[in-house]
Amino acid sequence: MLRPPGQGHGNGYHHHQPQQHQQNGGGGGPLIHKHRRGNRGRRSRFDYGDGSSSTRVSVSDGEDTRPPPPPCTDFDMAYFHSYAHLGIHEEMIKDRVRTETYRAAIMHHQQSIAGKVVLDVGCGTGILSIFCAQAGAKRVYAVDASDIAVQANEVVRANKLSETVIVLHGRIEDVEIDEEVDVIISEWMGYMLLYESMLGSIITARDRWLKPGGLILPSDATLYIAPITQPDRYSESIEFWRNVYGIDMSAMLPLAKQCAFEEPSVETISGENVLTWPHVVSSLVFSFSQVKHVDCYTITREELESVTTRFKFKSMMRAPFHGFAFWFDVEFTSPEIFSNNNQPSSVIESPNEHPTNGSQRKKRANPNEALVLSTAPEDPPTHWQQTLIYFYDPIEVEQDQQIEGAVTLSQSKENPRFMNIHLEYASGGRSFVKESVMR
Image (cartoon, rainbow, N blue to C red; front, side):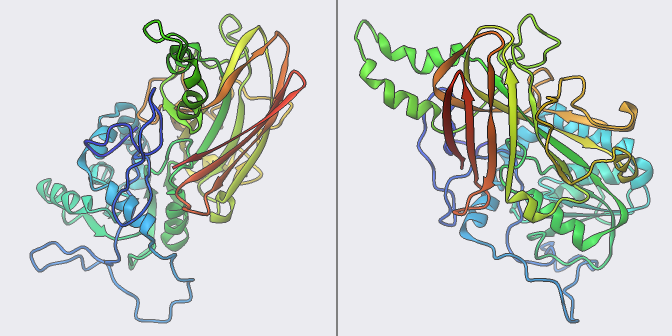
């Protein structure tokens, strides 16, 4: 989890102990600092500080038939302000799985990038833009509304790439670019994939500037859910209170459960915690289910407002069931390859009767035709980790016992960058509901 220096584990997420929410700029509420660059301010071109500016950015003088961009709220300003902290970008860049996969994807698609125009949405320090320039891009528009854009421009100049990489300081909804682009690249994924709602900015950029048949990196994403067992975490956070230096403090248990498990928790877990993959019967209990598959070439903003899917799991052994884990994969696939998958919709629900297993979850026509960045527990860890929804009390499940239910992820009406999580699940003749908010 990313956070500005000095704020600890704030912003409503729990890493073994509750923290107070922190207000962050502009009057907005707390926001977990994963790695969203965001887009701050309303300047339509970057002022380089020496009297010059990019001549490739313009404000249209003609009649604009496009709907007006959404207003920049206090929540947006707080969000953008948070990404001015260098520590956030440092942690993202030091995530070698993330950064090296992006660089490998750029070189994998070098033929589509060399001599072409690229748009980097939420460029941060500009590292992906520079990778594209190194791959031979004719021109790269690096857009970011956070004040980190000032440093990004200095990085570009220090690497003598100012003629290729044009840094634009503003929201993607507000900047103007006077040409179409061949490629859109962005590292937009939040916790549970959709948290922070940055995918909406990719949709805006795609609809405004991407040429027909253009490339989007990453091209598609899949979110997964799996039951978990996590006795160590439950013991550390809850059972601790039953005997504290010989004192019975079990009266603290209800409050301890609320503080530890009321909101989602971002943690790194292993395959021993995730009770999934039926082909690893010795230590894993449940098959996991695909929540949603997102096609970045066709997804709409409306489809992101609320996502619902049903799931069904079957226990293969007796185990304590402590909650659910979420993780995601993204793929870097060209549009013609992706179309070969014959996916019927931009947001695809997994069939209830056919849960996806680990060997099937990466969808592509040919494994050599796409690169995959995975945040799954069995893969090398990333700064996204996994997102866990804990129950207040574990459920003991027997072998072959079914667990079924539904999950709904929806944008908060309070702040669209927050996400409401509504879980309904039933097992052993009992039904439960768990509601959480990612703030």
